[in-house]
Amino acid sequence: MRSIIDILDLSTDEIAELVQTAQDIIAKPADYAEVCHGKKLATLFFEPSTRTRLSFEAAMYELGGHVIGFSEAQSSSAAKGESVADTVKTVSCYADIIAMRHPKEGAPLVASRAASVPVINAGDGGHNHPTQTMADLLTIYREKGGFENLTIGVCGDLKFGRTVHSLINAMSRYKGLKMYLISPEELKVPSYVKKDVLKKKGIPYVQTTDLEGAMPELDVLYMTRVQRERFFNEEDYLRLKDSYILTPDKMKNAKKDMIVMHPLPRVNEISVAIDDDPRACYFKQVLNGKYMRMALIMKLLKEAGTI
Amino acid sequence: MNIDSIQNGIVIDHIAAGNGMKLYELLELDKLDCSVALLRNVVSQKLGKKDIIKIDREFDVNLDLVGFVSPEATVVVIKNGEIVEKKKLDLPEVLINVIRCKNPRCISMTEQEIVHEFRLSDRENRVYRCVYCETKAN
Image 1 (cartoon, each protein chain N blue to C red):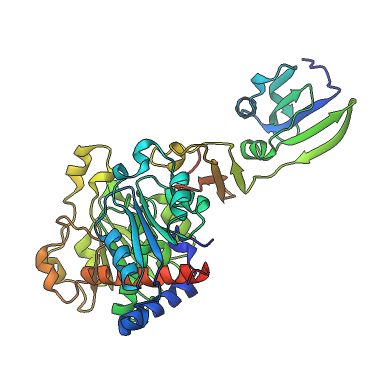
Image 2: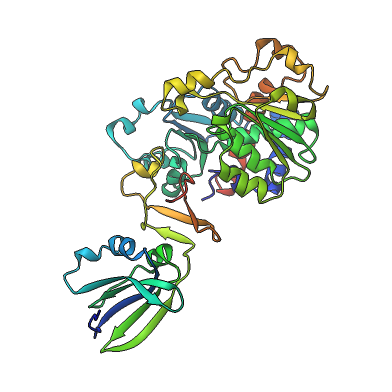
C-alpha cells in the first residue's frame, strides 16, 4: 500500500504529474467534483492545525468525498493510551485514506506500516510535512514557470523548520539551484542537511545572518516562523523570535519578480503591509496546497484501486 | 596469560580495541551461565591491538550487532575443538532492535512494541539514522 511520508517518496516525474493534475483541477474543477464520490478521508490530527486539516478536508469535499476524524489527541483514544498502530488499524476499517498529523516524529511511518489504506503524512513534529512542500512546489511552478535555475533564500528558523528541510530536499533534485540559508546562529540548518543534501549534490549555498544582503540575489524568499512549540526553553524562544521581520523597506532591494513565500501561520515575521505587494505569494500557497492535496488523494486512491 | 581453548562455542576475534566491553554488554553475555572470556588490548599484527570474546557454548550471535559495533571483527564457530565456520562481517544496511533512538521527540520512545530500526546512511563515516525521525545513532 503506497503512502506518502516524505516528499522524497515522490519522484520528480510524480511531482510533475501531480503539478499537471493540480493545474488541470484549477482549470476544470467541475471535472473532478465527483471523482471520490462515496469515499472517505480520515483526518487524524493528534496536534492542533488550522490550515492543513481544513485543506485536506476541503480537498476531499471538492472531490465529492466525505471526511471523518478528530482534530486533537484528547478527543481520540490516544488519550486512553492507544498506540498509533492500533488507532490506524481501527480507522482503516472506516476510511479509504488517512491524513495524519502527530507531534512525534515518525508517527505517520508507523501508521503507514500498520494501516491497510494509504497514509499521508500531514506533519510529524519537526520532521516532515510533504504536502506543505507540494504546496510550495506548485506555487514555485506557477509563479516562476518551473523548478530549474532558481536562487532560493530560506529565512528564519532553519533548525527546527521542517518545511525548510523538505523544500531543500525537494528542490535539490532540479538543475541550477542556488540556496541562501539565512538565520540566526542558533537556528542554522542542521549540518546533516548541508552535508547529505547540499554538499553531496554539489549545490552552491551561502550561509548568512544577513537577509538584506542576500535579498537582491533571490528569485524566491521563503520566510519561516520561529516556532514556540519546538523550544524546550521559553527564554531561547523569546530571544530569537524577532530575528527577521520582512518589511516593505527590505523589499525595495528585492528583484521585481522575486516571490515571497511562507508556510504560515505567521506571527510577525512578515509585515502585514507586504500582503498587498504582488510578490507576496503565501496565501496563494494555501490555495495551491488544497489543489495538490486533491491531486495526491486521487493518485493514492487510484493506485490503491479504490477509485 | 592463558585462556583455555574451547571445544564447542564462539570466538569473536579482531574486535576493534576498546569495543569488546560494549559488545559484551549489547550481546548480553552477562546473562549466560557458561564460561565467557573478554580479552582486551591483545596484541594483533593486523590491528595493533584488538579485543576478543570467547563463549564456551553454542550461541546464536547477532551478526548485525557485531557488525555495527566492530565491522572488522570475525565470528568463528567451533565444534569439537575444530573451526567449522569463520564469518567475516560488514556494516549491516539495517539494524533491527539492536539500538534505540535517543530523540525524545521520536515515536519509538512511546509506541508500544515498536521495531527499533536504523538504516546505514553514510558507510564511510559509519552513520546510522533512525528510520522514524532520522536522528543519528550515537
